[in-house]
Image 1 (cartoon, one colour):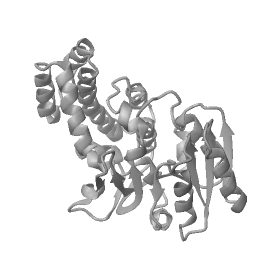
Image 2 (image 1 turned 120 degrees about the vertical axis):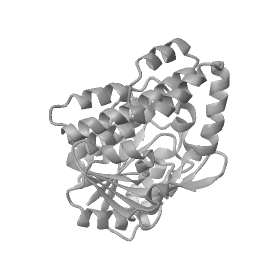
Image 3 (image 1 turned 30 degrees about the vertical axis):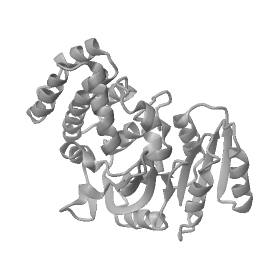
Amino acid sequence: MISVVMPVYNGEAFVARAVQSVLDQPSPRWEIIAVDDGSQDGTRAILEQFAARDPRIRVVHQENAGVSAARNAAMAAARGEYLAFLDADDWWHPDHLTTLEQMIRIYPKAGLLGTACDIRFHDGRTGNTAGFFEGKPKTLYLENFLEAYRADKRAKCFALSSTCVRTDAARQAGGFRVGCRIGEDLGLTLRIAAAAPAVLCARRTVLYNKAQSTATRVQSFDPDWYFFEEARALAEDPDLTPERRASLTRVMAWFEVRRVRHYLIDGRRREAWAAFCRRDADPGLAGDWMLTGLLFLLPCALVRRIFLFRWRNKA
């Protein structure tokens, strides 16, 4: 069985569509654990109405503690062997669960499974994340996802709402980091991928609704990711294989480039310069570091405008 992890905060405008998209799945082997994270609107009543009609839907109420705490509460209550995530402002296409179940049957050792997704942007545009599969098989088994991600960041073709993980792998990885304002999903993804293979599918089975996402709109340039500290701790894990440790180190070197840019966007030139001076000597990042160095010639306000424009058109 697959347990659907659904955190909800003030979601009365859209949560019914998310729940209905699970009900519309042909596969019957699922449960929803919807965690109402202290909503102040009509979310609770909507969820309770669904739960009254279908015993596979369970609702947990808690005081507002943030999305990571809500997901962890759902994970703790889950009965399924696998966890599939669905944020309340996204929805699944009707083939999502059958696609995941097929992947699970073929690749039972995978700890992380993800499908491509359609995206709805803030300005009304649409796109998708299937570009990673150009010239590749439509289903990819990756023994070392960290290396695939290092080589091509499009390997993160899955949003959290198109991600499925083994329940034991997620629990062993420690769940989501409470208090991490952004990147908590990437943190869990990398922790699971550091210990288990991943499987990716080019089929677009989810609508990732960035138009409703507050986190991506407000915090996409947060340079103070707890994720950096988490990755350093992961790299020191004695159980991590040398191959995965090397891949993780190179992935984090790329994120250091992003952090310098985000410091500049945030107007923190001194911290940006200190991080720039500590940069990794990875020759594969020479061009990225050269471009980042040129950004120091511009006022931080202009750097921010440039990246906001780029983000609106590509993020």
